[in-house]
Image (tube, rainbow, N blue to C red; front, side, top):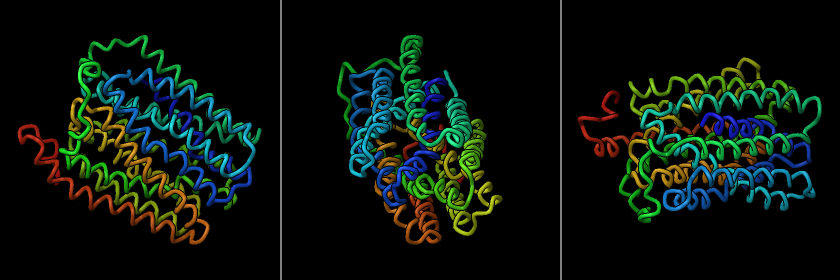
Length: 391
């Protein structure tokens, strides 16, 4: 699992900070870049749900993740040979997103099974993935500063290939005996059973609004810092600071969840996200950027680990992978796919007010988490209530 997450987030460490700057170097505007980034998320709304449902039923999730990783690497290399035209890049981005963005829910659901049975620690594995993000974002900045942006898709493809190979290696080496017995070949899971868990679904909706508030940050932050005179090396370091904060939180996330209810953490996370975007709206000073990047631990890592715990403990047993797919499709892909073009437009027209709009989206997560709390609490036995310690 460590190798899979290392490879996946090594690719993400290039995609998030440098994919927008690479597109910018090709001559695309901020609005067009927002559209191209959004196109990556559109297909996951469908493929994420369908493929994870199939993984719960008939297909081994690690083998499927390996196939998708290989295909995504090939697709990424095709960007190097495509004519630089907006709609051609949009179409290829859709294919790319339909392949690569499903690898994480497939891998993460497998990790959650192992975490629940104390075979691996979810937070520590995610921390290793975040460490890979730091390495590639930092050294990627140095590489691209010296050799140019043309290397961006090549490095991403190499990381994807590594991820696919790690999935195959784990499939060969790890016995499935400690995990729950396979149910895929006996009976098709009833996907409608998930709707009985209303508290979990509302919690996922809360996460979707916090994630939505990150769209401006993911699509335009690197471009904005570059426009203010920060070099590629500094931009890579800014992202590294954010992920160092993320690693720190993930490393202790299980201990935090032992004392705080997941939904209370989601509420705190949404407020911290709003504070972070307010900081970015007022200043591009180095100290403000670094403070905002440190808040990534609370604006992202906190709510993500809390929602993972909710899914681990409250998703139907026969729909664990599917629930993970629903989370990434509806709480990540859908808001990112819908809001990223809007975020690019706001950045072009109202760059300062755009951050306050993101802050309002983040605070909506607090309201939804508050609504989800009594519903999820009522679904939990009082003797083993995970949420009774706080609120």
